[in-house]
Length: 171
Image (tube, rainbow, N blue to C red; front, side):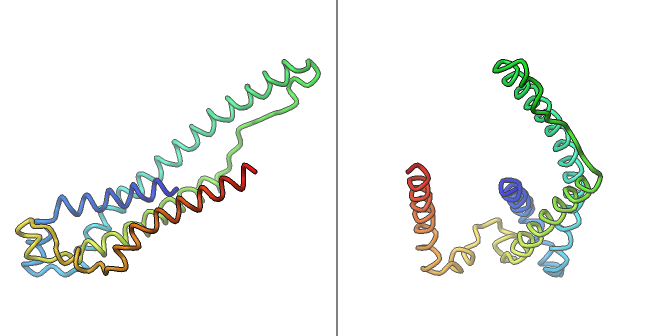
């Protein structure tokens, strides 16, 4: 889920970066920030609804394949151990329409939240730097010194915690 969420954020950021000059010109002629957000949200929701449906269908196909493989694997392994134990484990494919609806709705909701946060951030670009296609210096200045230090310390802390948990688990 986290990888999919990051992918969605990256796609929306790339769409905004590709249309940076277009957004800057639109803002210069009077388009409001909320209208820029709405523009990205409409386009994103079309992608969102189609991608969620495709994700549910692919999830069903992958689940069916995995259950068939795992069921065959368990039956083969238990059959080699003992003829009587063969077929003890039955792994079957089962799906309900409720689980498909929940998966679809969760996919749409998570994508919508990621798009909302990302598009509101993309709408705050400086109009002049966007039209001239210059790097946004205000964005770099907005980050405080503490945020810059935290961006370097945070991965070290997470890696240290990971090593600590791993050593505890192996003992």
